[in-house]
Length: 171
Ligand SMILES: [Zn+2]
Ligand SMILES: [Zn+2]
Image: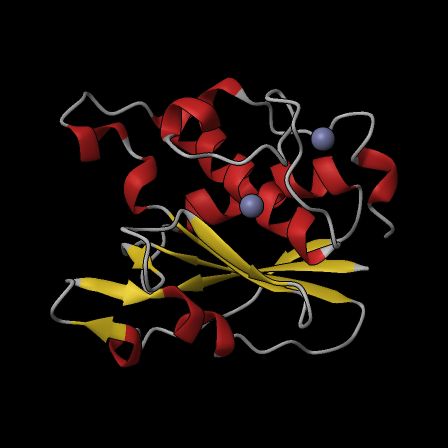
């Protein structure tokens, strides 16, 4: 199994590299960065001033069966009937997408915190990847598979799988 991270639009190389290292460490499998696509306009919904997550997710291409792909976008994502989503996973295709937009302290009028930002992105990526491995939401609020209703939930949980979830990840 291999995990591929794809920047969708403009994402700093430095962030991509740090995420690659963290995700590789958590899943213990080869992790690489490959070119994504930069035309996000196809998924833009002017009435909401947001991007339709599922549409971007459907555009993510995989190179093989033994690959999980995560698109990383710095735009606000939504799905119908929800105000926004931190990310979305397509279990059938093994692809996922996460948004950086609401993970920054600045989004809430707070001072930047790079370490916290990276920690949050890592958790969101690991969570969506967990879904691509067939995991559902976990009742343990420290487990990365716990559902995040808000960033407070994200900050409370860890970037790792709990003892019940971990064995279900088959690489
Ligand atoms: Zn989830
Ligand atoms: Zn768990």
